[in-house]
Length: 508
Image (cartoon, rainbow, N blue to C red; front, side, top):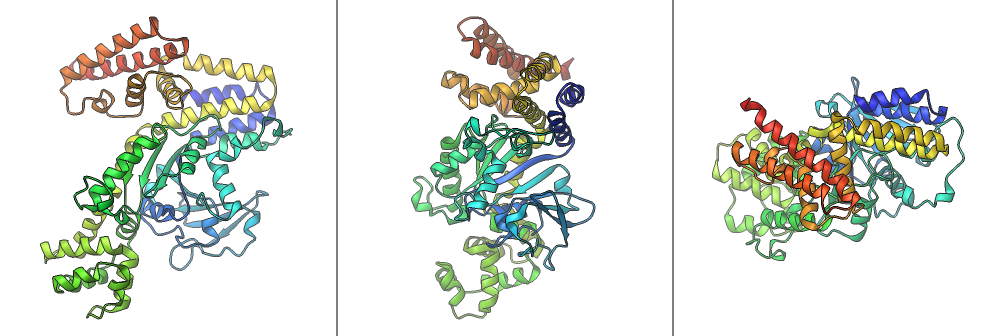
């Protein structure tokens, strides 16, 4: 990879400290994309992490572990490592229930983070980072999350930068420590600090903010939304959640590519083995009850668990903890519609109802399909930050020149497109609203139809449109654009031209 080659070549031309930073950048380039799951406290982050991994490993109850950053990554042996602030590591086995132990048996004030290694196929392509909730009363937990997201960096004054040694100083370490992408979890109301956290998110450095290339959001606990509170939902909970998610997307854009509704609790139960044949049998018993009685029971959790009926109260409580009332209702409806449905098929119905598959597909489109580009862009941002932190003007210029040479090469187009997208999304380059939307669309989609804003269109139509827009952006770059706009316009012109070539190749 060209960015890796640049790091290798520059290592011998920079200070030992900067070279150590470059070595860390190279290590990150060779690993999976790192995705942080972030959000406010009690937004259901850890539950969603378990659903994404397909295994209940992240503690969801408030405890020591939920106050720490935990990195879930692929390993050949399942194990937990406590990483201390002084660099020491202590290995722990997973608890008997397969989760990270709720209590670590160490002073967590001395803990940097937790590394959890799992023999899990999902983690071969993506490292998932669970973070403490923003808005927590525990200042240390918030600080750990903010440091990962880069928010702490924004609070430092320039004159607070530390003088360094040959080891990585805090500034340099922060330049390569953050996640490269973020899955941000919101609930019904997007608050000001949600937007601030996204604004502060850094994909490897404090200069690289969250944007449609590296951030998506989910509206979790979608089943708790009162459909009557959303105009046009027609009493449908999922329709209400979808409409609210679309509204939140307009609020959070261009910080995120999309906001998708999800029910993390049902997703976790269905995907991580929490839903059992005994649960399916209990739901069958509920499905046989009188309609009026069951409807009354499903009014609230208290009524559901306290009502006197044949299904034991403890069993009903277990169903509630795994599926909540929405999941119980959905499962009962499926059983009544298909009495012979198997436990496995019922689990799939619940998984579909959770919205997890749509989140996974979006993760694949936004993150996985362009993981190399996201990592390379983050690596370049890290390299720039490391050179800046060195305090040596000659070193900084040497790195700057090397990056400019790299970006001038045709194979670096994707990096230039990601850079242009970041500049426009962050407002660093001011563009008219319609052109901003077009840049975001072209740069943040992997599908050609979506890039061109013509989903489902035929090849001839797509070809003509790509060529027309390529010509328009070339003209705009030459006539009427400011110098900053012109730089972006040249990149967008080339993007359209390459799309045109790509569409024509199968015919040739």
